[in-house]
Amino acid sequence: MPDSKRTVAYFYDSNVGNYHYAPGHPMKPHRIRMTHNLVMSYGLYKKMAIYRAAPATRHEMTQFHSDDYVDFLYRVTPDNAYKFHKELTKYNMEEDCPVFDGMFDFFSLSAGSSMEGAARLNRGLSDICINWSGGLHHAKKCEASGFCYINDIVLAILELLRHHKRVLYIDIDVHHGDGVEEAFYTTDRVMTCSFHKYGEYFPGTGDLRDIGESKGKYYSVNFPLQDGIDDESYSSVFEPIVQAIMDWYQPSAVVLQCGADSLAGDKLGCFNLSMNGHGKCVSFVKSFGLPTLVLGGGGYTIRNVSRTWAYETGLLVGANMDSKLPMNDYMDYFGPDFSLTVPPHAMENSNSREYLERIKTQVLQNLERTKFVPSVQIQEIPRDPDYNDINEDLENPDVRTTQSMKDAHVVPDTEMYEDDAMGQSSTKPKQDTRAVNEESARNDQSDDVKPAINNENKPDTNTIDPVPAASKVSENLAKNKSSSVKEDPDSMDVENEESKVENNVVEKQPNSQKPISDTPNKA
Image 1 (spheres, rainbow, N blue to C red):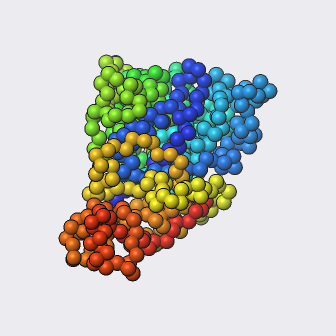
Image 2: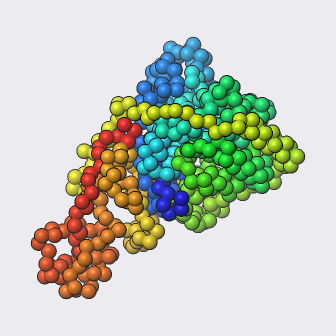
Image 3: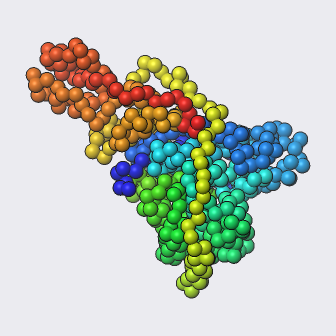
């Protein structure tokens, strides 16, 4: 499908950057806010719909995690943690995974956005969904691991499996995606593919011989790598392996974990990928045209993480981005070059060509062990109807175009945007916007109508009412004022139109589309 016709949904919650693991902890949720600020500064919001998903509920989390573990996460706080000494040890929440303020809320936001993105892909409302706060691939069923407490990836894949027979999970984090692999180790409905550092390195799993068990045998693909792999070497194994999986497994949906700790210079990483090399993997997966959920993951040099994820957002929406960073709220982080680049370092590549070819050959042989594309007989399972509703009553009724409507609007490349016309750059992060269920209105919308929230008053930017021939000037003004207030079609005449032209106002007829249901998108 051409890029111009692929719809992109972007999930962000303004609260996600407010959380803090612990003093000196390498995981910084603030990196998500920095990424979003760059996305807004580059104007990428014009090319995608922005949503604020409802947080995941405890009930949703127990679709994968155990009830007692989720209940513990909900109850424990830094103030009462001393009462749960045994549980902290049991659930591995001590050094790497500390208890911090707002912990449960933070992971509810992450998981809710990933599940919401999967639900939109299921319903065909979006072709690509992005959640940079997701990708927490180490969390297990009953314990935290590697800075991850709730495995939003597994929850999102379970949602995709409601509609898709086969789902492919690809992981380009420097660490092995052990939590996701473990969750689907015995099934052929999910193939996991991880390219990671292997050896004396966390989490210590992901050997070439770890290929799955029972029905899932040969459906776990692991490509162990050594220190210092560069763009060329990484691409030489990533593309043929992913291509072979696509040809053989034929998934109908893809989840891509874009851990940025595989970049050169990461505080905890040991690879030597540039931003362009990392982004090339994203572009290659996108080229298959499948419904794709793109998630974040690791990444601990936050100035590089934010630049890379903003750059990859641009790749996903098909935008051309200037190498010089625009003015943004975190400009001081990106000095001294202030450019959209993460260059490779002068680092030895311990991955010889012979080593990479040997591993690649073995992986391809494993793929050939199963002769046929797995198929399953499934039926749709409706989502549970206990999700947080969108309280649109909080929207100001006197504002004709609400913030949620603006966030959901996608600007065609040929259309003049309001900020462009005024010579301004909109850099303020969009806040408090949630996705709603558009399925009820989808049958009444044409294919070229972009996703919107509460669409009853949304201006129609594709058409404009004919203007009486009494004034040629009014016709030009009508084109430049396509987002102005409504008109009363029964009372419009030439004299009124000329009067409106003098006041630089041209009114439009109300949009006749049905309002979108207030039912949450995940219902």
